[in-house]
Amino acid sequence: MEISAPESDSLRDQIQNQAPHHCHRYPNPDHINQGGAGEEENDSTNTRKGYLILLFINYGCMFVGSAASTLLLKFYFNHKGSSRWVSTWVQCSGFPFLLPFILLPFYLFGSTRRRPFTRFTTRLLGLSVLIGLMLGINNLLFSWGNSYLPVSTSSLLLSSQLAFTLVLSVLIVKQKITFSNLNCVILLTLSALLLAFTSHHDRPQGLTRFKYFVGFFSTIGAGLLFALYLPVMETVYRKVYCYAMVMEMQLIMEAAATLLATVGMIFDGGFSEMRNESLRSFDLGPKAYWLTVVSNVIMWQFCFMGTAGMVFLTTSLTGGICMTALVAMNVLAGVLVYGDHFGGVKAVSTVLCIWAFGSYVYGKYVEDRALSTKNKHNNEISNPDMGMEMSQLGRQADV
Image: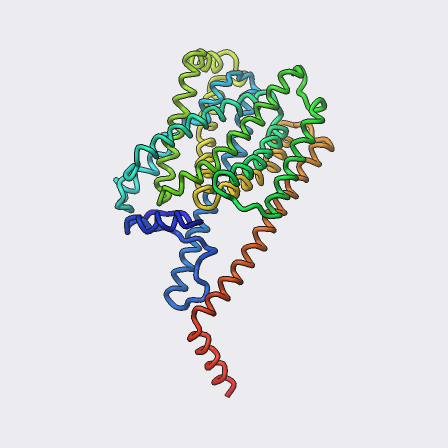
């Protein structure tokens, strides 16, 4: 059975109607008929549970991958690792780890009748490659930023991507602007600006002002590219009818990003530099070096796959919000693990991040409650016979 996304608009509804019968899709929980009874009600409940489980798994992957990969990348630079191309390469080179999850369900377990990589059009394949190259550039910018900045500072700066995500979501996928998401964006932008204006207090010892701002603006650039990646992926995923295709697209994108990083490694001597780092530069020895590299490769796949799943199952803006929710955790992890300075400005920035996310979650809760009430009212209107039957049963019980 194929796991699929909730439909968020009429285009996805059309795609669902064109999907094969063996490709099961989860309807949007907000659109599940709450007024039915018996078998329909049980089906709706089971569908919602399955959707929420998959959503939880993807957010868990995003949570673990984001926190661990950020800390491991900083660990690499802290212990005399210095190659930005190596740190870029490890972010995407773990794509072969996705192959068992793509191939085994069909070839070994027989749990799906859909052959992997079917229904891939030339356009979809081309888009996957182009987005993968964009992701490779994003990885390089992130590596530059993380090599110069403390983990807590880079994490807070990356939260500014949400402002870009909202604007680009409005332009690309026609995201509706509400008070909750606008308030969230304003607060997160203020958080990033606070760090920018007080950056001279947060430079690591020995780091020049020029290099600090290279790291600062590289991180902002990475946030902008990632913000573009999210709504573009939401648009592409509307042409994808099951979760298995999301993993297949992710593999193609990561392969393209790896190709870009590999070309950079070859021209910049990255592979020989990797060997020299493991033997001479890395101060914890070769075993610790390769363990760091392999762990980084795996954790980045968790992060990217979780992010892709969140965008497919929800929206690009929700995916961006969920990434931002991890900012406070990454800041705290940087302080606890590496002893990053955590002064008043950084504390205020973290509070603003938490406040922004909290306001967004509360706004979504209010919207969902209102939608649920509206759906229930519509169901009562569309099923007047059932309402009359319930009234008759009530009168009989009174007698």
